[in-house]
Amino acid sequence: METFALLPHPDSPAVEVDAVEARISITDPHWLSIRWKIARAGKIVVPPLAGRGRADGLWQTTCFELFVRQGEGYGEFNFSPSERWAAYDFSAYREGMHERSVPRDPRCTWRGGSRIAIFDAEVPLAALPPLPWQCGPSAVIEEQGGIKSYWALAHPPGKPDFHHPACFAATLPAPGGP
Image (cartoon, rainbow, N blue to C red; front, side):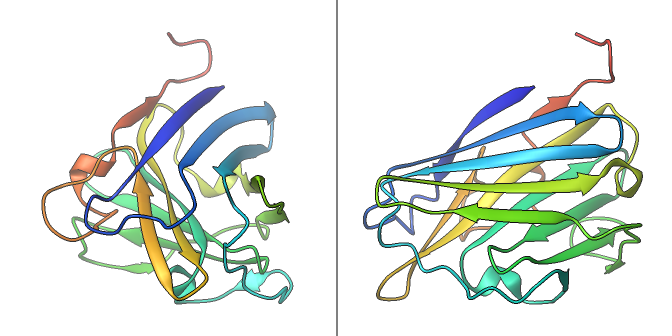
């Protein structure tokens, strides 16, 4: 189990939210679990419940993301409090995008409060490359008034870009690894 403190992009600060962390764990032989914890969450815009299923454009409002890389290409997973999700493969930086095969719908659960909000996503391990891999948990947080902040382990110079290699700042080891 790994817990990561995410940093807001310096050019898009949050209004109320002052901390976001992501915890990644494998507690079941078939699922990877990611929990995002958001502090001072009372003004977050939460998309309405839509039921499980694929959808594009989730990043346009509050959305939680995981990028995984093993070798040249990488995968992108988007999870929404609406229960919608998306998964893509890229052959290189922002190139060769196509839908990633996912054998079962990821499970998404939002629990919001004024002080703390928790968002859990569970992804079938069969949809992920075998460990070890580099990863970048991230989040787009929209607050009331249309204010968006972008949270990641690291940010490259310039506009927010979770696809940039700088954002793949963590390594998850193979089971039994260090």
